[in-house]
Length: 435
Image (cartoon, rainbow, N blue to C red; front, side, top):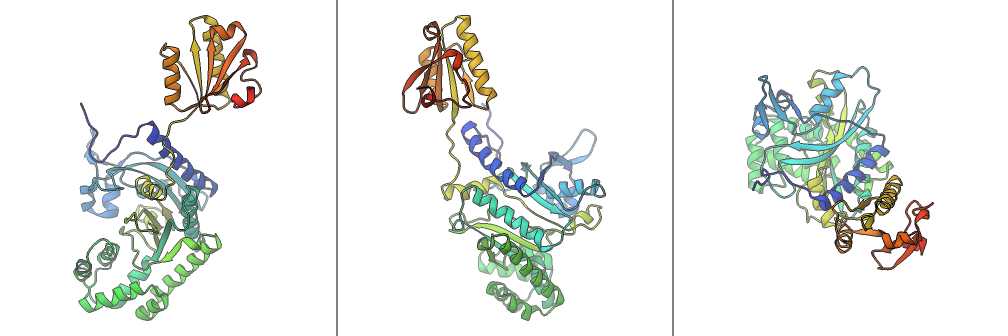
């Protein structure tokens, strides 16, 4: 007997039904915001990720050499791929470009709660606008996606910051600080002990006193304190931009979900402006649920014209933890509208059952019928197991009276209806309609 590979999962119909409901809800919100769906490959050149993240990224990739000797990898994220796609048709595409997709990705990393080696997420990106309104739209899209799934303001918060505030503050300290390493240290602030955190800042080139002062300003969450600490045009512009984004998001009705959090850094190096992470407001889900932000330099870095960009990527696995904690994960019970039950072997039974099945399906109803030659009792048991709401019994005895039997599986009541008038003019006829 074979088991699946570590870090990947099987989804049986009841689980997949709930996941599909979540995906459909997320995608419906994206479409209402004017995002257009794209399809992307599962394999890319490994160089696409190495150039963006460095040679060390190879250890996290499912990469291999194909039959032509090319170094390729299963896609670990979508952003480089969509950047490549934008570059390929940059002159033809009307701006802003608003794209989304939902698909699996692969990353070889430690398996833990809410994190797998094969994972699914929705990606939504806006290319071609550097205005605060674009950042605000991404925040509003993310908030509406969560409220559309049944979450309220008491369930989640977006912790919002700005990468140039962090970078500008670090630059203002002076010395030989490695800004990117220091930002990565800030990104780990909530995940490590205080001593280890300060050690990471020191490893990035900050002195002990500078590290403590820098962290104290971040923890204050006060933008005026930040401006006073840094005193640079870069930080002033970043603070102005952050305030503009927060104001625009407020205008879109999602301000209640936003919390200023200067410690929020996002570990990836390509972020350039406003960044945010979604967290469970109750703290029961301790990890970040998902995040997003602005990455204005990426398109140019893969050979395109300078193009501002901002995006978000809710992952299904961590999102399921939040939905489950809040009690709004979709019902995993399988449901069926109709089961057309056949009793007898005559041609008329087969023809009438097939007609009714065909007509119900043509009206958009989920309809099953017997394909295994089972007994009446076995068919009724199966109808119950698939959550059939209504059973239509087509039997030789009923047909002798030109009738079929309609059984309400929830209440147990049943009645008959003229065979030629069923399903009739109803799109979704039930026991109550024909009783």
